[in-house]
Image (cartoon, rainbow, N blue to C red; front, side, top):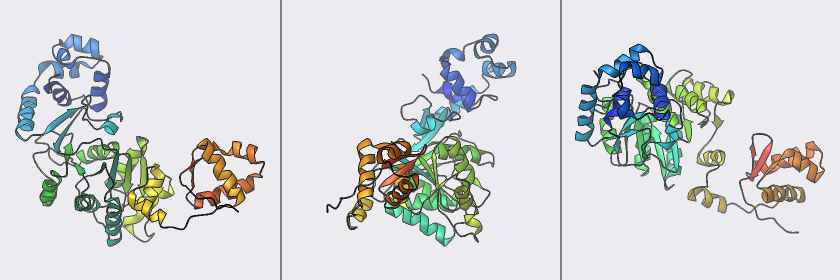
Amino acid sequence: MKLIYPIALTKIKGIGPRTARSIIEQGHNLADLFAYSKKDLMQVLGIRESIAEAIYNKSYMPACEKELAFIEKHQIQALWLEDENYPDRLRQCEDAPLVVYYKGNQPLNSTKVISIVGTRHATYYGQKICEDLLDAMNGIKDTLIVSGLAYGIDALAHRHALKNNMPTVAVLGHGLDRIYPASHRELATKMLDQGGLLTEFTSGTLPERNNFPMRNRIIAGMADVTIVVEAAIKGGALITAEMANSYNRDVCAFPGSIYEKSAEGTNYLIKTNRAHLIRGLQDLEYLMNWELSTGTIEKQLSLPLLALTKDQELLFTLIQQKGQLAIDYMIEFTKWPQSKLALILLELEMQSLIHALPGKQYKIVGQVEIQKN
């Protein structure tokens, strides 16, 4: 399909991401669609006359041709929803943009994609958290860091990812013919060598206020998990977290002082169960059930081997054999009182050997050498 047709669909007033996606999913050939009469458009698509007229009169085509010339001149990739290089996780979101524009050298479908967001007014505490987290990630393969190039935590996440030789992509709230804020131009240029810049907005689009919530949904939709480092009770970071939750993606937040405004948002997310509390990479890997990084493994191997009591060993072995087990089955098998079972489960969980799942299920997440008497 010629790229001009999906670009054209994004230029038509009255057709947003959901409507455009619906048209695609109905199996319509876009080239044929733009050849329909106004009457046919209304009948085939079931759209209002004003939208049919907007498609039919093709007043948007000069702008589309100009955009094609722009992306070709500047070696920009225009990825549309059915393109194999389109971000897979974003594609799963019902309001995903029909077309995204990407300039960079990093594939957008890494094994792990992590969005890091936060306040523009980061404290020393927030900066240290962000830096320590990314330092701990150094050496983890096929991981992409996503943020929004804004002042504060966003820019810090990009800079520290680059420092640790990790690919990082900034999602912009404007076209690729400019950088906002302008003071981040040098950072953005460096990212083109180790990541890239991505937007759904065509060239000439200004960084207007209404664009940034749209930008935030892409930050949330591209990632497996969104991490909020510091955030006020109102702001873009909380909007991003809310969108991630709406996509059934994981959200994590670092707790902060109850006296700091920069922690009001993160503490609120944790308090209302909108985010998991994390303290660092090990907590993140545990919550995401990711294979432990080399640094974490080395740290664990340096610890003394644990020995289990007979009751702990029995329960651990039982869960290990089944892979995942419900409490009801444990009670039936062990014949223990529920209070005793709850205590043993807590002991195993405190040693990071098992992990509680929804529906009163447990699974193994750690290994232990069982001391034989």
